[in-house]
Image (cartoon, rainbow, N blue to C red; front, side, top):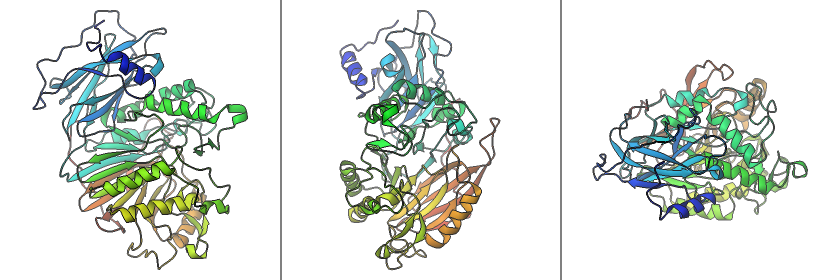
Amino acid sequence: MIPNPNTTRRDVLRMLAALGLAPVATFVAGCGSDGSASDGFPDYAWDGPLGPENLFAHGVASGDPLPEAVILWTKLDPEPGAGTLQAWFEIATDPEMRRRVLAGWVETDAERDWTVKLDATGLRPGTTYFYRFRALGRESVVGRTRTAPVGDVERLRLGVVSCSNFAYGWFHAYRFLAERDDLDAVLHLGDYIYEYGTGEYGSARPCEPTGEILTLADYRTRYSQYRRDPDLQEVHRQHPFIAVWDDHESADNSWQGGAENHQPDTEGDWVVRRQAAWRAYSEWMPTRTPDPERIYRVLKFGNLVQLTMLDSRTVGRSLQASGILDPAVRDEARTMLGPEQEAWFDEQMRTSVATWNLVGQQVMMAPLKLQGAPNSAGGGLIANVDQWDGYFAARARLFRSVRESGATNLVVLTGDIHSSWGNELTDDPNDPAVYDPATGRGAVGVEFVCPGVSSPGFSPSAAEGLLAAGRQHNPHIKYAELTLRGYLVVDVTRERVQCTWVHLDRVDDPSGANQAEDAIWSVAAGTTKLVEDAAPAGAGERRPLAP
């Protein structure tokens, strides 16, 4: 075995990693000044017994791109009883891995569930890289990633997904996204896994473990099952992810102090379960989260986009109201983000210099009313207390923060609801003195809501009834499709942000599905009005996929 060459930092890094505070990574060489491979890079060598053939059964992944760094991830599956292991990584500018720019060792062990997660630094901005891992004489597949650009950026192109329930069908949406060669990153807005047992919410595929997941071992096992899915592996292999959790990464309708799908008398202490869920997420997801309990963060793409990722689910959320008539819906003291995250969001808006401020978060921000009325007349009847509607004062504070900050061009990207929506963001859509649905006057921004990857939407009859009510009581909702699965392609230029809803005809057939670009809406810079487009924007910069 080749030893880690940097022994002075190793023990400190391992201790921090065990606490969830840092990845264990030691680089043996850096990038040349022109980005070309340095002559000083050593080659990987192994003179011991070969590890298992399926040592890299969970593939590779990358995420949270910065201008000079990106998170790289893989997992080892050694023989039982193995001790601390070292994996070799290398990064190159070509898929054949001939023009290497970085290489080094990273350690892992059972305390991290054999996951390998490192922050690869010293890279060039706006550059596509290829990477792979080696360990115990075995070699991973080659992955592809991309760093964030700097300066004057003309275009950014993102895939957006949420709600991937293994038990409800196949991940064809991931496969279609993996085949696109012009995306800069994929945003996953939560419900990456589901906590239910086999047959409890979907019966197309069995779950591992078979029961509801409660412990750290359970959560790790469920992530392991998901990450063996070939379509999920492929989209991770081809694109860097920027991800946040929603409720099902822990338990359904979770909040700071519990969850609807958690019964303390039979399932134990909520904090213990939540911390197990957070730890497994930190281990298995390619996120840059020095604190595994804090998922909210900012990523910047030159002066074009500031992407603010929120936690509207667990870190600061008050208990949901008991029902749509509960006066707690308008309680000023209740929070969706918590005071600390609210203050942090306000600071991000006040300091943003980007043309577009994109916000990735979990639950629908726009009002969704069963009966419309101005706020001065009671506000009408909302549809769902788990959404921002159930936290009226918290939403008002967020909108006020955006208005007073001077931040421009707010576009909110949302998951959770297993359906497709295009909304203009106002907290008083039924008062013509506050909001004009014809011009967008009075809105603070727009919202694009993505459908589920596989999780089911509304039944056709429920969708028909909700859409009928929506047309009459929700003039700020410009587009809705409530039954189909799929994903979004969000295309950003200085002039506009365009969203294309791509829908699938089925997820119940493992052999595949058909996709269609069903709706294209955009918002022009300096406006808050959604406009339907005749066609999606052409492909962005085409870059070779990983082989």
